[in-house]
Image (cartoon, rainbow over all chains, first blue to last red; front, top):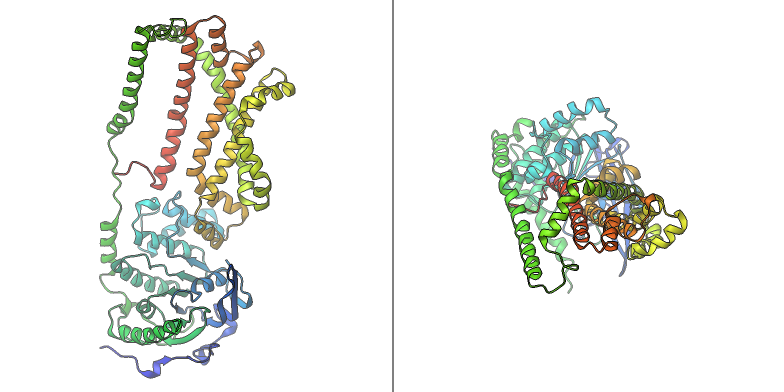
Length: 277
Length: 301
């Protein structure tokens, strides 16, 4: 029933910071949904210059679900800001198809609008004509299982519901790429578990590329087709795993646990290397 | 959708049968409860205490009057003032006088919003404007508006224009600064969301910053109104002329000229009533609507 992952499923690039693409035969850089090419980002702070990202290369195929994993200071959020054009790299290039949608840890819905109006704003700026918005809002709310909640105010929704409206709003941007910055970190375990199921379902139905940032190893293995481990200060790609688990992939799945254990081991090594001797 | 490798989870595999049910159960359990007190209880808790306070003040007034600490030309009895008020209301003079002042005050206040809000928006959004004009505006806010009266007379002579100049100079800085404060309190996350959604400068201002700043801006509006009203009264008290109509300030001047203490006290009470009335009719419902829509009502149960 359960298939455990063998060594052949784990591909690590521990020594070379400039990781070659994981599966060369699958790499279509030309038509990738997101291409990050030798990107570095340096912030100038009070204590001089701090390198947040160092020479990161990564490409996300159309329809692929990639999880970015790392401890604090690995520049996960910086990387998402670069992809979503909220910020620009110091060197290297970031390209993506269209304007990527971005979801935050907080639902970040506008509290003066209803759930439907929040989605409508995304639709408006995605160029959806006014007379088509109503139907599209209902469609999106159906997709996240919130039918009939269009007129709810934000404060009338639970945490999980808010994150689902936020997901619907992101999908309303009509983008092929969905970036998610620890979107479920603030939810309780049971709600998060349900959100994992829902996100996987929505991803299957929409065919979006998803770049999902998290510090939760199990969550990364539970969701992603590929898990990319970033080092901290500066952020570099230090390992990549292809998740190849058959059968229902729940957070309790033994194979998820086994793979998470392997990745955690590597993550701990990475973090320990920062200890001052 | 391109072909994905065999690690793809198929729909049948991922969808546990009970996911929808568990999700729906969580929704019910976590749905915030928003019951409000019945209207009569809310009314009771918000009206009874201030009325009691008013009664206390009246009782103290009556006692001080009966002790004859001050001659009657300085401190008339509450009853005499009440009679005077009834007379003013009955012969329509109260309504007319209040309307003359109030319409002027409200019109000046609206003009102050039209002028002050764009100024506030520009100061909040452009650092160099904030650094240059911001301190100037804050300084203007501390100017006593009566100080503008001589200049206003020099410019507009004795005319409604002179009154509006005083009112605007009093209210515009408060309103502009109120909007700046409101916008400064907007969580940066909202602007990031606006950016991600593709909103430009004007889109951010219209759909994100202005609505998000509204609760904070409301304080600026309240202060703006207070300054409008105070400036108006100052102008009316200082300048009495048939060209300016007969407002509350003029009514009180008349009381002073005639040494009519009850009339003077009645005038004060009318000014107070207008202040409370505008708060109850305009600002309280506005605040309620803004806070209720966001679930920010202060009276949480």
